[in-house]
Amino acid sequence: MMMESESRAGTAGDRPHSYLNRHLVRDLEELWSEVLKLAAVVETSLRSSVQALCSGKIELANEVKADEPTIDHWQVRIEQDCLRILALHQPVASDLRLVTSALKISYELERMGDLAAHIAKRARKLARRDEPVPLPPQMEYLGVEALGQVHDALDALTRGDTDIARQVIKGDREIDRRRQMILKDLKKSIRQDPGQVTIWLHLINIARNLERIADHATNLAETVVYVKEGTILRRDDPQPISEPS
Image (cartoon, rainbow, N blue to C red; front, top):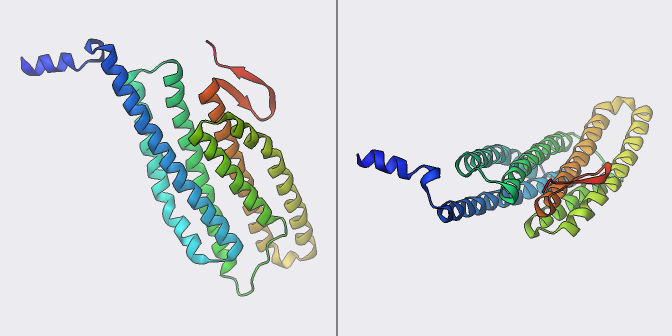
């Protein structure tokens, strides 16, 4: 009888409302703490990958590769926590928005971690060549700008600052223009020196990955606005969509 009684007492319908609220608040705080910790690890990994590319330091590229499984497992754990909160607490309104946003952000971070690993892999290949491979003049600028977008997006996430988030969204077009400039130069290099086509293709791929990192940073910034305001922004859509009240 004691086990049956304890079982009934453990059902959500029999618990006091304040009890449920208290535990939901605690679980949400723990969830977002994990999201922000993962964000810090991913930013470090991205920074190391760009440094490995620019400096040719293979040890930095190896560190990024070693971080990849940790980031993947961390993202899965956050996803599991989100699903547990949804099933256990059945949150609504702003609480539901927090959970679904944490789920989306963890995915964006995991993808950024993958892109860091891809850049590090190609940086390692370029560094191992007998002759050093000069980066296109704009490539390092693109790397710095992409990292700046990531840093600002994560700053907006940590602070809940929609002004910073909107600046990140606005800055995405400059990243796209920079990547187009690099692509134009690399296509010219392929025509002038087709014997080095493998190198040029590596660099084209790296430029694309840097642009995609900035795209994910923009997605994070859009999510910050959604969390704080309930407004769905899309960078190519001038009309924001407000969440139904």
